[in-house]
Image (cartoon, rainbow, N blue to C red; front, side, top):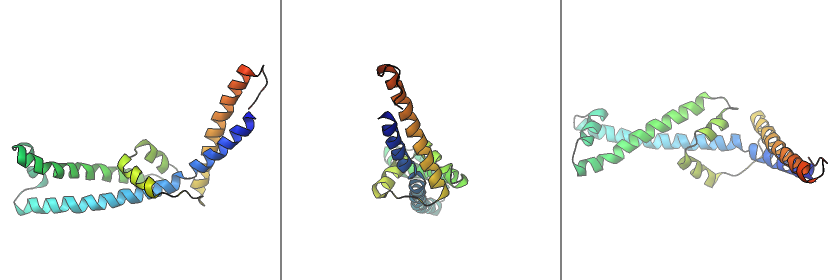
Length: 165
């Protein structure tokens, strides 16, 4: 019974793992959209500041030295610039990686806001790519291996030495 359950968990792992490349692609598309949108916003801020004789750095410096109202008004500018820089770095890292590494980088450096919006629209599908098959095999191996080990330990503890996995 333990072997059968381990096999079923392995199949579930394969199905879950196979989704990684598709989710990663949609994640990168959403990330690119956010970078494009923030670039437009920050460029408009920069143009407004340039019209008043300021560079971005000078405007942000003056904002940080100002009183409450101006500091509050500049807060969204500063936050937008920081967010844009972070998202650009994240996207560049993903674009530089190969297809097999990207899902691992997304998992490791996940931007929760981007991931939540992608997850709302994501529809699981069976991939027809080599790297999709690799992640399916990896998912199978991880869940099947973990379940086999767990059922083996449980079988050894309660089964009188019989092997269940």
